[in-house]
Length: 122
Image (cartoon, rainbow, N blue to C red):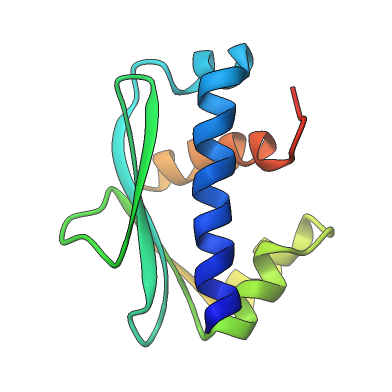
């Protein structure tokens, strides 16, 4: 569980840094106003707010996220979120190890945001 929570925190730090230092990321999030969360079925997770060109994050869940990524358990989440194979996300959905709820258009937007998670990625 600790590794999962740490990974969610790292995601927050990478997004914050990219929003500040990477002009392409700043442009990508410009004008966005949404809250999303990543969690396990048991309810452990973190939520992220994208607003006013900034990314903020808090531990725990929020009541009305724009969308939620819910993983079967922390280990499954770690495997999917850290996979080098881009198909891992889709396989997780097919296997019901990952359930997505909420605004699917914003989920697609989020998938574009993930390219800024790699350190040093432009």
